[in-house]
Image 1 (cartoon, one colour):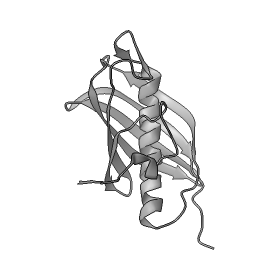
Image 2 (cartoon, rainbow, N blue to C red):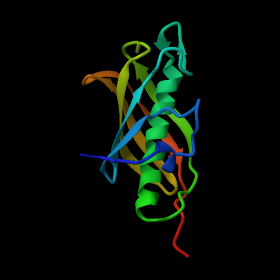
Image 3 (tube, rainbow, N blue to C red):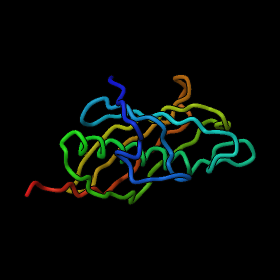
Image 4 (cartoon, rainbow, N blue to C red):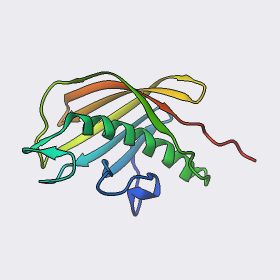
Length: 144
């Protein structure tokens, strides 16, 4: 696994603060990726010292977006805009405290045209904190 070195994660993501939910992106291969996020005290998406569950789903979605953004950057193409269209069977096993560093792992499990299905896992020190599936719509641009 190679850590992607970028001056700024916004090179591959359209998200901006306070909605930027990943700090680093690591490409694994064409169908799998890993990102990292450290939640600072009082950060957007934290309440009463805990990370809100729905923010973890957004972390998974943004890891997928970073994966496609990175691929576009490497091909020197403009990234096509995608969107999260559904969340399925997301389970939250353990609460995550502010100031915690998490790893977000995504794996593409299927593709139906421009729709792609991903399994996501939130890990903290190799302990699985949450898992679930998302569907994204990502019409990749064709070369002209």
